[in-house]
Image (cartoon, rainbow, N blue to C red; front, side, top):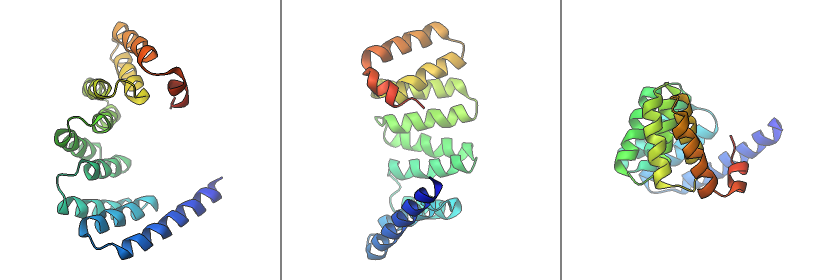
Length: 169
């Protein structure tokens, strides 16, 4: 229920606030402040915390992806794409960075760019259901149905069926 989720979130925030108070590393402290604000739905404050953490550690793809996610939830997909692209450039072997980049491109209806990012995510993590299914969906949207069918066939071969069923979004 919503009430249970609120209690769970409140306990998580309380736990994080205790950890933050004890944190001495400025990057981690800023990141954790961003997390608390993010969990509480204070997206502008979350961005401030994440950006401060990024200022202390500009080469952290995970922080770039957190910033991209907040931008996307605020509806600023250009900023989300820019940050996710930075993350993918920093860690070109990160399937998560490529998948997120594909999602943000799809949100802006740039399905060709989305397909390219999803293809890269799928290449890096062929057994990851989200990468496989998003790649197939992007090909469908581009009306490249034979290619989409081939991707779905590969999904059935490479991804265990219970993983596909369990992760259907």
